[in-house]
Length: 277
Image 1: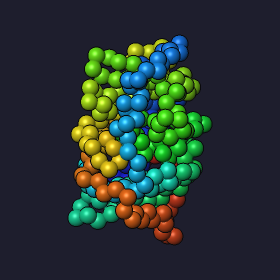
Image 2: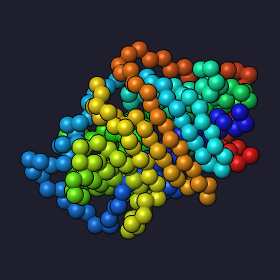
Image 3: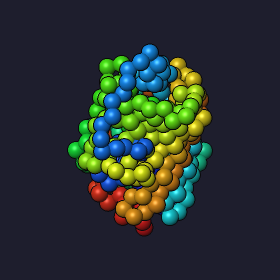
Image 4: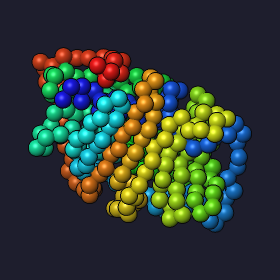
């Protein structure tokens, strides 16, 4: 169990970073010039928006596999309260929780029950001033397009997304860049998300990519049940996959944010050094 909780925490830090830090992030090709989306009856944004449903809470089980020099796999439980919190419980053996990770609107918590240690930091430590919200992170976990800081793609913010066709596929590219990076979302001919990519301005190669598969129609609209990520963080190559089982929507969800009083507090900035041990 050596450093397993640190691994999961790093992974979530990567997901937050993917929302918009200047290190490594998510999107498909972004250009230095702004193109204008032509509004027509068949505007691709409208088509994608029609596949997105409403939700308030979710709870699901699943499995995670992570590789970053060493490999690790575990069952997990995931809970979310929309626009409020994300909870990930790590349960590698017999459903027993050995650690948990919680992201709220302004805080990041990680509790390692094996080594009796925890991290409690402001989310801003990971976002480098980019206006990322917990809603944005939830959309990354579920495979839903969003505008950074302004929520899931909808009729009121779609003017901030350029839409293009690539054969039968659709690419939505955010108009606004952040610190030299742009981000976009790719969909197949059935309007199912296939990836989020972050692209440095002027580059043709994504700095960071989140791939999606097993997209299912649910009460909350199209939701990806398999997520695959590859990234380089602090010169370390990382890859992970997360697979959800059937998701229970809009039920009663409990997210325990408590931290045992006898645990040792650690600094989130030490995560990568912990991982390398």
